[in-house]
Amino acid sequence: MNGTSKDEEKKEVLKNIIRRLHKGEDPDVVKAEFKEFLKDVTPVEISKIEEEIIKEGMSTDEVHGLCDVHLAILRESGEKEELVAPPDHPIGILMGEHKILLEYADELGIVAKDLRGKGDFDSVADEIKHLDHIAHHLQDSESHYVREENVLFPYLEKHGIKEPPAMMWIEHDKIREIKKGLFTVLETREGVAFEEFVSRLSNVAASLADMLSGHFYKENNILFPAAMQAMGDAEWKDTRRQFDELGYCCFTPEPAKMAIEEVEEAPKVEVEGLIDIGTGQLSKEQVEAVLNTLPFDITFVDDKDTVRYFSESKERIFPRTKAIIGREVQKCHPEKSVHVVNQIVEEFKSGERDVAEFWIEVKGRMIYIRYFPVHGKNGDYIGCLEVTQDITDVKKIEGSKRLL
Image (tube, rainbow, N blue to C red):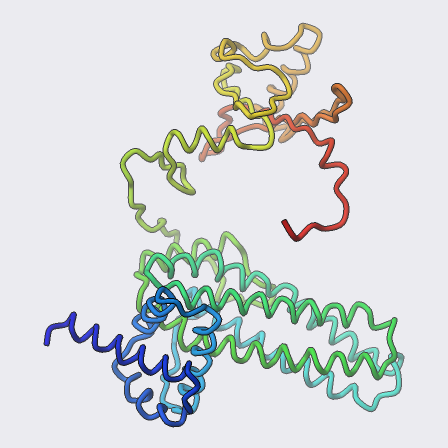
């Protein structure tokens, strides 16, 4: 039997196991079969099979439930080797943060338990201080999830591992909701009876500990091993560089985030007809369309004070014609304001100023005009960008809008 046939057979066996679990068959019945099968299947293979099952019509939520069953079997088997990664490796950093966050969740539960039986807020000042300390660190943990969602997950998706990151992101949002509940309990404590506060705190502490424990177990035992198997050294170096750019939690171990040797970005795959603009590749048509879709007007003047470009948004505020391309910017303004233009440009070139802004009323609309110096990769001044925006309706915004 060739390799392809073996792969197909492996997929069908695992699909059958997952379908049986999904139909409600007792996990104990298939546990031994699943345990034996896991010896010959990799995390990447499991991830790709899950992707196939979803394409066949099973919902992400259903597969999420199957993932829970899978983890229960892994836990009961007790034979899963613990993943090991250097502390300064992206996976090592994430796992180190997992450990610390679980410790904070445990502390939260311990404090909540200690508060039971206490009389009032006045007698638990130290405990409240400790709770605020924990809450601060949990707030700062957002960096942990942001790094996973914006760096690790995209890399995994490029390797065909799509469903595990999607499921983990769903759980990230659940964690955020639980944390939000915790912060609300702490912030509104003065408006409720002490016993009610302790009850609410205990409930949210238990929810957080349970959620983090299960979530981190899934990442440590399924997601991260799949990542280690799929991604190469160049990708991991680039991942670490992007982790550094996004920043770390206040509690991330210092040795883990110490500066490492300068690394190059992972090699980019160039596509014919596309322009590489650093953070992506776009066609000339796409670049033009994107710039013209911006909800404000932009005009670029080069380092020789010559107008080189302006966008053509649907609702341009001030007139611009192609005749001005190649014209000195000073000649695009009335004589009485040229001295202001010169001052702005001179201060941009010298580094004395990093923005110049004005706002005026035109035909009953409030217009916000800003100028920014533009610098090249080596820091040299290469021009000036004018941004003009109608902010009349923006100024009226209040509250929140979360639905379309």
